[in-house]
Image 1 (tube, rainbow, N blue to C red):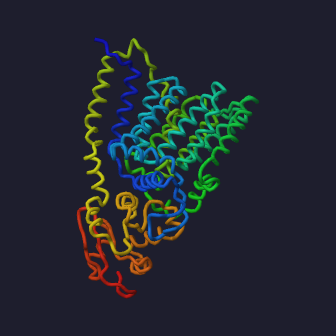
Image 2 (cartoon, rainbow, N blue to C red):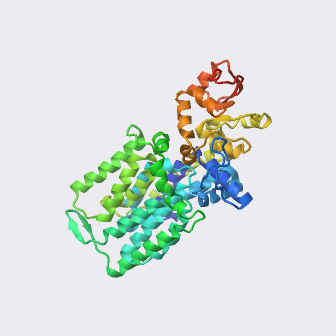
Image 3 (tube, rainbow, N blue to C red):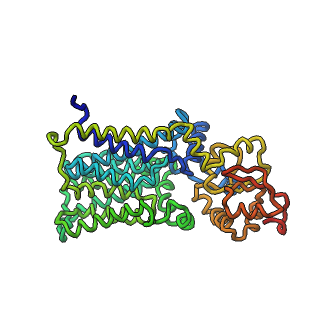
Length: 484
């Protein structure tokens, strides 16, 4: 009996299975909760917030919801099927990114097997960004832009898609800046014609140059089609230039560690590309080199951009794997299809329980203060609460009547100095003065934190609630000489 699926289709299914497995569970993203609350507020009031509504430390401060458009699909998914809906949407976004990337690799290399291997390798590298995050929309738009540019290079058509993509992108995530840089680099490289060793640049025709200039101007204008005007356009630049403390202290903004598996894969990719460039006599386009160097810099400097590096590197990696025999129907037998189907089935069956509502709730309960929520509703705090940074968004969404001390909207808290004070608190630098400064009466922290240990041994604080994840302290004595 002949198997109905073709070999390329089975390889594609196998890639989707790998992405499914890498995306299973993984709801531990601190931003998703306040994103859901923002979308809920938008649907309730039909207005976007213009100031902070969730904290007592920066209440009323100007704040711009710069990712408002991306929040709507996630909120709709949550309303449809709770945590499972969020997980399914996240999975669909990840798989859409890599299906489009597979298409781009196939167009670039002409070798389907090499394209599958390149995308598979890069999926492990970029899996750090597979959480329920608005940046997934950004990466989806990024691959679309790369496909449009590749098709324009080969056919001279399709640039009209760029302005609407950038219009959606700027309203969804600040990573549009990277997309605009990639467009600019690709366009600029074609304004010169020459060859420098193994690097060459092919000059655009006069008609192509006119189209690129028109598309660039139209895309730049499309950026201003947003509810915040020029402020939304300059936001990513301000974020990178002003927020030094959060970038230095938030995990996703840390550099790649070469002591773990992901760091090892990253260095293998970079060194592999470098080695092949040295030993193989192949042509490198100037635009490819510029984009790759940009992606390597961002990917190694900030771990959150490893998926960006994966997207840029995958088509080049597929080209370098051209020694792999291309698909041949007479040699690629149906029995291989069956083996791949079994591998895919085992992986999906193994990971499927991780996507149930019960399993996802259990995952949250290990990371967030879920058990204390009933207590907070029956015993609402009668004063300001200091909460752990990672829990702020969760409390905003699940306990909206309680104003938080801080959450992962680092921009508004950094500008007001709250983020710096929080870091001093957890590092036990002048904790008494900071607690007095904000009039903190309650502290909601994990049991293993150093501040928790100090409060447990201070008679001026008592424990109101404790479970395996969280401890709620109440201060029983006030005054500048009585705090911790």
